[in-house]
Image (cartoon, rainbow, N blue to C red):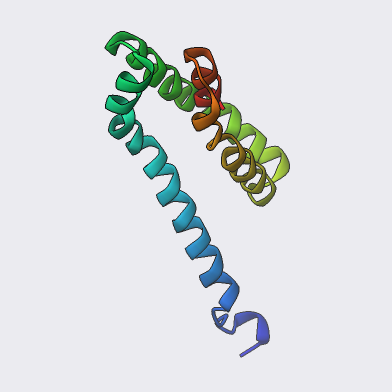
Length: 113
């Protein structure tokens, strides 16, 4: 049996990549889910109406949906590893900005990132 036909032994790198991808997926899911949990606090603290909060939520989900195809093209052009690193960095830097914005436009802009 030649070396080319030998079964590859899994490396530690595969496990690390799996856990990093799982953690990223979990955090992205958590980010989408917690929007519904913080809505009452946003209404109380900023006085946002249900309509305003629905518009913010819709803008986020619409951006998420419409960005899927272009992000797939970017991934094809530059590779999944590079694009994932950039996306996670931008997302990580933008996420805390929700807390420092003081108006609907700031929150809307951060939600679109």
